Image: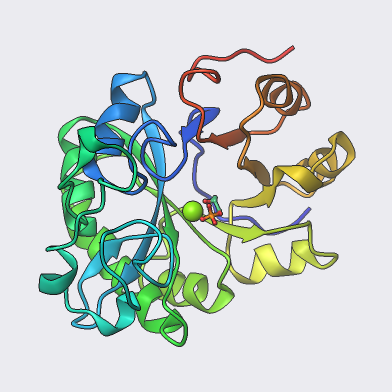
Length: 253
Ligand code: G3P
Ligand code: MG
């Protein structure tokens, strides 16, 4: 049996992906509210640093795909980023939706007793400092209570830096497929879980991770029958963009 982080697992089985899935523009407060409104008490979202070291919620390295602007987020100040329209690309209903700071997401989550998965998605070359910044922010923002966020990353450097400063928070390593040496990796990073691409997940893999003493989550599950299959195999949580077709209280078969 591997050495595990001695934290509990208070998270639900279905998690809204990128705030509110595809129902609203990804990684916006509007999306987060939409997720909650559809019964999702937990959302995943992506966090990185602006040029002037503000933690922001944004998936890509650039703002090109999800805003009316262009350029690398790492080269833009928060002031410049917050003037972008992050909603018009999705639909006219969300035109003018601003790019949120992580602290704004945290405020909404804490005020409404919600849960979250912070994915540390560092701009290239900023892996360690982003992990450290997220740790300090979580320490400060969750200091008065609230269920601790699950903190995940594809970047082992970011996860290690986060753990150095906020070792009490549950962590998950993100990976496309289960690494052969996953037990060593999860032990050294003090992770509670591994979050894997659902395309590469089968019952045997789930059982292997469980036998080693870890939780396993699947991203991104947008097919109803696949969602039920994974949960039926004992997958601990799935991330979904489809908040209507895959309801938060979906059962397993
Ligand atoms: O954290 C799960 C999932 O969000 C990872 O992939 O690219 O959607 O951030 P991505
Ligand atoms: Mg993500």
